[in-house]
Image (cartoon, rainbow, N blue to C red):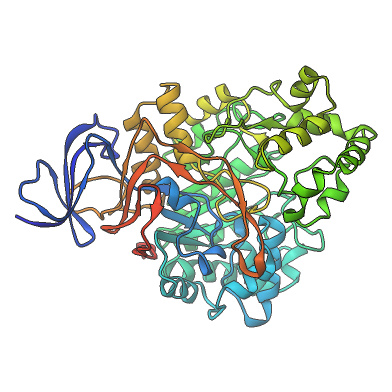
Length: 553
């Protein structure tokens, strides 16, 4: 029997957590049709030669809502084995939207997620009003990977209440209308609804975004409407010690009201350890509530390079320069001396240097340094001021050096403990957001290289399960996430001994020449989406076979 495509002689890691086994995998159209020993020949064959064959990875926290308009390959996550991305996190989306409100939604996305509003306004067709119409637009954009989206609280509130929705809570009639639109959006294909309780996520005028201080009655009404169509409720809680307990109880209220799934972002910080809230989530789950968390499997934070603005606070002259002029500028000794003098006079320089960790001069970035292995320690060892060390490293690398300034998940024992909880799945890379500040999108490659290969703390089969079937369960994607006959053919062929991230770099490929951080990967022999090869030997093939995955409703 012939097949459209056969992956031959692989190590099948099927996504269930079961022991990997040697075998072949056959695909016809967009579906897996045979697994094990596949006789005959495929029209196309991929020789896995013992490499791991896994389901495609699922990224539960992205902000690619804008970038999909001009980058159908949805980089960088498609370099890292991701075949399905969840859009619309954190309560900020572009639908529903009245034509007069486009600027407001674009500016809200810019200030919350650091995506340039000019790129948003000019890079998308803006030919929708409802969320269902927005999904139809995404289909016409023909993405390379699958996408599924949530409707955001900020957009729905503003659609119903206008500017009153920023500072005021809705009336009972307005709550009913907000809930109706949320439920209608899920009925029309949204996978769920997202809301955001971080007061630091603000509008251009400094006010928190609509919905930040929503009361439980509003959230429960929305949850009932969303749950009626089996939708997901996604939350960003406020990680303050006097707020987190309340926000976790709100998760429980939403889960009870919806009868469906609730997802929230969970992290460890210097001032907040998630073990503190007295097992609140475990207690809620013991009720039978479907509550899940998502976290980055490494330290997450800012990137400091010559081409980003995460610079010494006193480097204002360097920050004001076009990024393409900065390397030549610091080659001038007099200018370097001026920068160093300014940094020495600024008390904030020492604190800044303590927070920076050099990512090394190898192709693979170092994310595992301890907090005391920082730029200040490097400078003391060299007998320099930290600003001198930073500039010297930039010159020695021709401007390519990268420093990391983590601000969450910084302690690896705490991260490991967090990830070991059965309700936590890996993700939270924020792909498409904070494009000039943060680059955490390579998390799947880090999970496989650090936790599986280097440390041996997580078995390959378990790591794959968490990125595939466990994530699919959160989204209730019933036809993806495992390698089995009849499932959709989203597949990776990867080398567990070679997979890893590459150093973050800055490119200018956004509309209007705007720059962003990207991160390539190594070790991916092939990635297939719906049976078509979109990536071969770490490079895109040009194939765009992704789909918009709509809710079960």
